Image 1 (cartoon, rainbow, N blue to C red):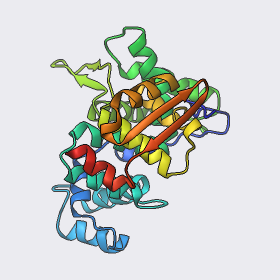
Image 2 (cartoon, helix red, strand yellow):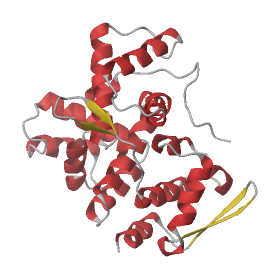
Image 3 (tube, one colour):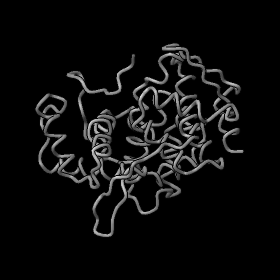
Image 4 (cartoon, rainbow, N blue to C red):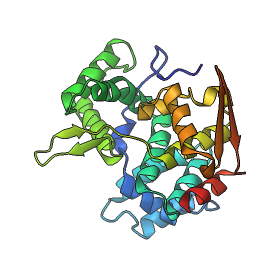
Length: 268
């Protein structure tokens, strides 16, 4: 069984989230202009020359392209960028794009993954209404104590990281900013489209039928193994998938041949 949390004594958190939280608008703009066949250096030069990111400085633009866009979506393969670009060009809900962007961001940054699983969803289930920087700072303090942050960060860096985490959760729809600037918790429900796309993405990456519903990515959306199977089962054959269960044995039958075909089916 795949663990639903990545936290362990071997995990080390970094401050990479400070370079860019979700940056949904920036990622969409870059994906609109990105072509799979274009070398990275040529793309970066074109982004800077055409001023794709507006008023960003040359240094900031390079940071976003190299440390956020490329790191999350192009390395080690460009499959994440290809998928997100196709989602953008389809008629799928914008929230589906945000959901997969969150998945790819958390895979490269265990801090994002662990905070969502260990703090955000417990806050939802306990009925809390607000998530603030103190909650994140307390989480970071615990991570420093158990060695996930080593060496310790300064107070200023911790505050920047805390604000970046809350900004990411706001950008992907997990938090709602009130008129007073407070971060109101949203009991988020992943879209049907996002559910099927993530399942197909895991399947194409080699995850077995029996392990797919236990993959740690589902924890980002507060889903247990049973929740995942119930959602996939309820989505139905018209979305290209049948779920068969017999005790602990699970079989997924796909009626589509590729992710590209899956997105086209969902966009109809």
